[in-house]
Image 1 (cartoon, rainbow, N blue to C red):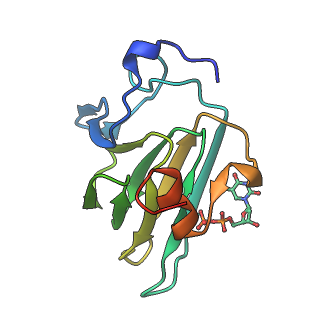
Image 2: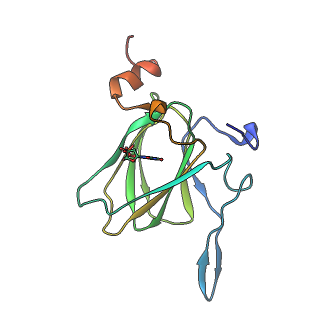
Image 3: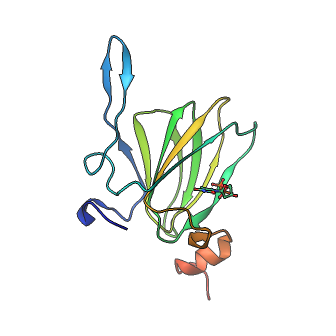
Length: 145
Ligand code: TYD
């Protein structure tokens, strides 16, 4: 990965405030690195039309950094990095959830019409995924090999 600045990359998941230009015409959020996104964006995808009660994710990534943004509606993200567990509510288009590698995540509680935008530091690679929770917990030292 081509980091804009290694120093800006954190190994902790966290909520970050995104810039917002608000005037009488409404709001605009613009994202560019390195000011607002601490990695080069190689890929963008979005989750939408999730049926009521549905969930997405259920995996951790080995190398890829991501930022999740609820650009419409809201959802909950359940996180576990082997040390901390958290349930984070994403409901604002001017807030992003920064996820470094090795964070198990599940997206749930999508409101009707919710759209979750994901910015990623790597091209899609199916081999970059832990899809088995026990494999992930072993990788972060939380289960015996
Ligand atoms: P999947 O990883 O199952 O979604 P989730 O994030 O909810 O776990 O992805 C669904 C399908 O989309 C799967 O066939 C792989 C494909 N996909 C891509 O082709 N490119 C991508 O960048 C992503 C995230 C998924």
